[in-house]
Image 1: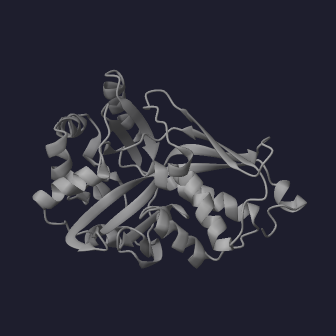
Image 2: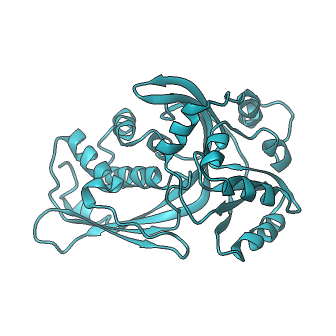
Length: 312
């Protein structure tokens, strides 16, 4: 494999990378299905809640990949067989693109801070972080186009996470149409003590589809300053344009989501709350950090997974 087995690449180990969560600020799911999946438009943004991936050399005798996962407090512990772990799959797909096998032993430790089945893209983010780490090990051997090809194989959100930030995504979520500009905005995350299967939420959506909202106004608001109107990008203006037409489907499966959303919106300084992706997390836009912290205390006291974050 190019450069991975020589001293230059080995000297880069260990590699530690953050793996950021995301929010769909606007999610417009179409009833149209292509290749078995719904088409959609969405404004994605990364937030500063992140897992941590550390890649180092393993002591195993034969070339192999091993993955150990630890979980933050209040996160459900999950056991994933190695072959089904998206980090392992990302490394395998990367090697397939190089038409190489692994010449060294890689040991990956993952500190999980992003809950699963939460609508925050933790698994997809982990896969993208693994691809970026392999690029570092292999001296950026693969092109951007090759990386995005791998990302599309792994999952629709993975391509976005290769760069993160704020962007308009289309297709199944894998096509980046435009880079957008978003200043740091205070966010409250509240996740009930259960997750939601994305597949089940989409199945429920198909039973009673809700029309997609128009995301054009948000895209216009979040244009880079040189191309944007004089409208200020702040918490209130952003909150007014949030939309997610999977909400009704998720709430029909888990009515507690609607209760959390309503309770968040009753808190002082909270502009609006909305389902994150396909759930089960609810996120709220706060006017300022103190409002976010005050709202978070209410739900933290109930034992729910609660985080105060900022958009990146």
